Image 1: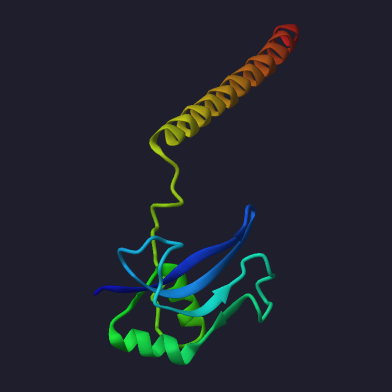
Image 2: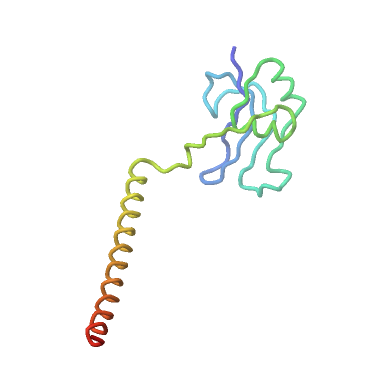
Length: 138
């Protein structure tokens, strides 16, 4: 039997509250579980001690038996120094998509063209200003 240490949702609509439970992988999220080992209340501030309550002794027992924590529970266990969780790294996640890159390139090209046109206009105006002065001196 494959076991997971995961969150089971409780609480009402728009007021989440989660129980940290040991459950069979095939059991539904809020359904049957083997043991409840803690609770997580995301509505509390991050620095509040009651935000995550966890029975560390039972968690280590279930980990030794072979239960696998989900990502969120692994974060809690890492904070409690039970399991070492390596932070994930996805450098491509922050990059914009293809169409956004195309739009940015078009915008940059339009700005460059506008600057070039303004510079050409300015030089033409200066030449026009200087041209009559040169003719008058001759």
